[in-house]
Amino acid sequence: MIGIGVIGYGYWGPNLARVVTETEGCSIAAIADQSADALGRAHKRHPTARLAGDWQDLVNDPRVDAVMVATPVSTHFDIALAALRAGKHVFVEKPITETAAQAEILLEEAAHRGLTLMVDHTFVYTGAVQTIHDMIDSGALGDLYYYDSTRINLGLFQRDVNVLWDLAVHDLAILDFILPAEPMAVSASGVGHFPGSPENMAQLTIFFAGGAIAHLNVNWLAPVKIRQTLIGGSRKMIVYDDLQTSEKIKIYDRGVNLASDPEEVRKVMVSYRMGDMTSPQVSVKEALLTEIEHFVQCIEAKTRPVTDGASGLRVVKMLEAASLSMRQRGQPIDLVKLRRAS
Image 1 (cartoon, one colour):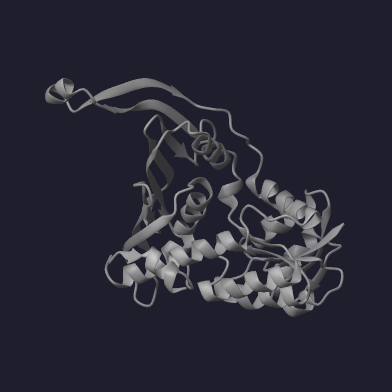
Image 2: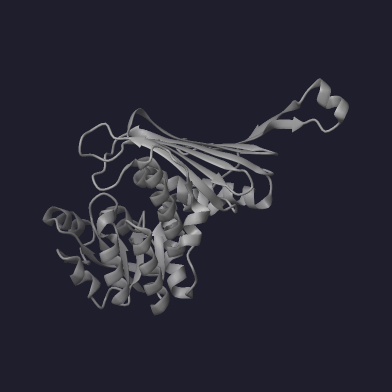
């Protein structure tokens, strides 16, 4: 039985602790939080877990085999590094760290000690995203043209990260999972409407090898909550609406066909294909449960997680480049040059 310690029992920590109790092969050994009120709530739900006001006590606890980090991004590196050095497997909330340099240190430490390092990119483990991945991987969509996402709502405003690091990080993790093409450049623009606060709305464009493009619209200051993605391919197109309770994915057999015969080109450049719409059955299993089961399996089998430290590093590199572009009012950042420089 893998003993798991949860550090941070504020917004996301209670969900992690709850799902751990529902996952075979592991149990809640300890919970740490600076807040006495948070520890009081933790005790009511997990009376057998050891409680600690200092996360270092949890890291040093011999009953803890793996640590889950659900604290502000600015603390991820110090906690995760201490846990790895103490011989603990680590599951860290997104994004993995504040900088790519920090993430690289965590990767090296985990590899050196033979420990599992996994990032909590929960959307990757949803039935919808898994289905989309399989469709792209099988070639059912044809050549991928675009990924267009709108991820907006009113709040929650963050103090330590801007809206890109809070919301766009989800789509960057999804793109890293579903697209085989390598990102070549990014361009981002955004604005913060409140003095002393980070950017609360932003637009991010990613250019991929092979011609695919991704556009992300993220906003904390929208009157409605929207979580919708359009994915266009040469054969089929997808509408993915995460807020739908059913038919989260709709597949459209629609598109355009370019004229190839010279005589036809003179008459019309394209013809439109208007086929049927289908909605496949997707797993309704809680994504976080699938994710934590995967974490436990990777520890037991000593295999690499789907959202391992390397994927977390790639996402942070994209966020860093996007933030740099945003500071330069949308100036494109060449990712190929950055990779060569590193």
